[in-house]
Amino acid sequence: MLVIFRSRLSNKDEVEAQYPPLGKRMLELAESMPGFISYKNFRASDGEGVSVIEFDSQENLRAWQEHPEHRIAQKKGRDLFYDEFKVQVCTVEREYNFKREK
Image (cartoon, rainbow, N blue to C red; front, side):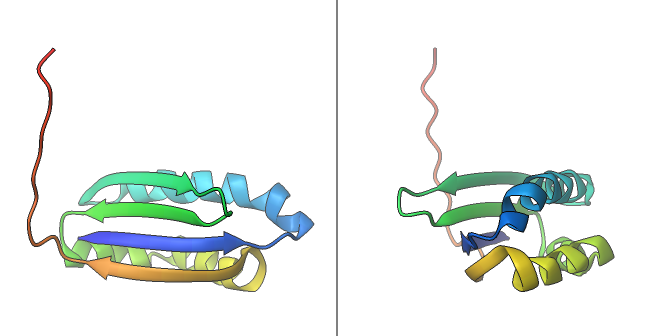
């Protein structure tokens, strides 16, 4: 299961002070959850952030989404940090890999 989280941060002073430590804590929490596979975060030149979070099952992803500490962070995100966001939950239909031998 993949979660694609696209967001635009608010320009409020609270964001600069509070967002990085909360983001770090949420990553630590996600990594400790059963079924966590990976997390990647990117910021585009237009300011949009994109995070890709991968879990091994819908059940484990749901447990992460509903974790009490994560729920508090989600509310704080809506109330304080984000001007907008979009969440897409996806199932991988196909997967291809390539890795060059060194």
